Length: 61
Image (spheres, rainbow, N blue to C red):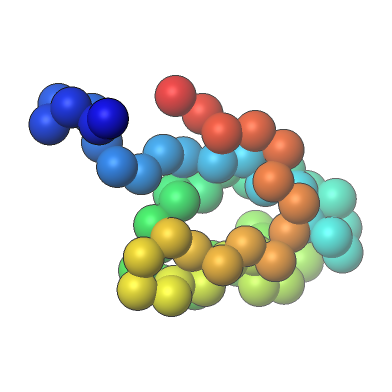
């Protein structure tokens, strides 16, 4: 059960599948997130949790 003091979304560390850059992004992004190195799409919004196209390495608390 989630208490009202806890956020529903978290930050996640993602690795780009093209250039292997590691980047921290928000789990419920409202815009398309691009890799800062090669400009490949890492995540896009779906109305709730983001669809991540890279590899999720870690969920940050």
